[in-house]
Image (tube, rainbow, N blue to C red; front, side, top):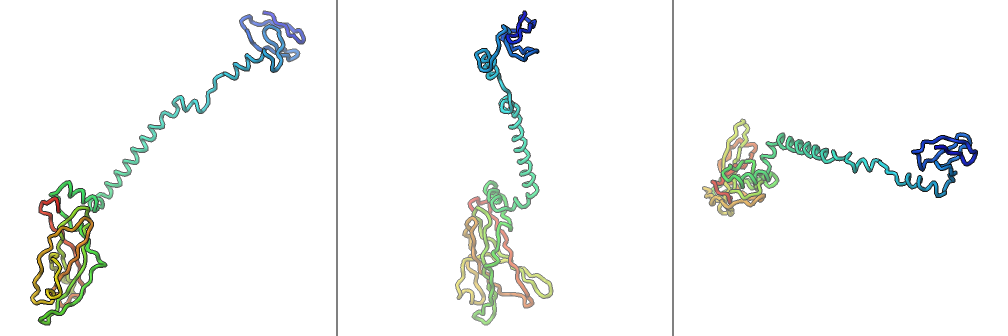
Length: 242
């Protein structure tokens, strides 16, 4: 098909299959269509081409994200969750001895397994509550009175423990005496000789609660320099309520 430039009338041979194309004259740079009509910017002849260009599909980063480029993101979060669980599990396993003696863990363990033994570590003697004094009794002898509090570290009630008293002597010999926690004694009972111990306190200590104790030590070694107290757990004897 022969097309003539409308400006300088230069002639060009164009394939007949080309339609609605924009041609440029090599001599005068005039733009015209395949029908030989000069194209003026903004006229109706350019609108089809502009419309086609404006409506041409675009493909950017947003489209890439929507098309599935980020489909691996959930898998990343899954792997991160698995790694976090492994780190937590490793930490628990590494500190298992600490966790196994933790008060909350121990409380759940004893609730689920009533036959599990109560441990000495389930009790804690409050050091700030302990004080001692010598008491002169009716017969003129002396007795060492030790008072204090022992705390239940678990979230379940426990029977009161026994208190082990260790006498640390100058010769390095440690004499030990174990006494149960008894019901409160009045001053007359403490001064009486021989001392008659009140009944053993069998009332369960509340979860995370405390129980006071008074120990009457009559035969204290003369070479004693110091004493040490230690709580000894009393077993629940299979009673899950204690």
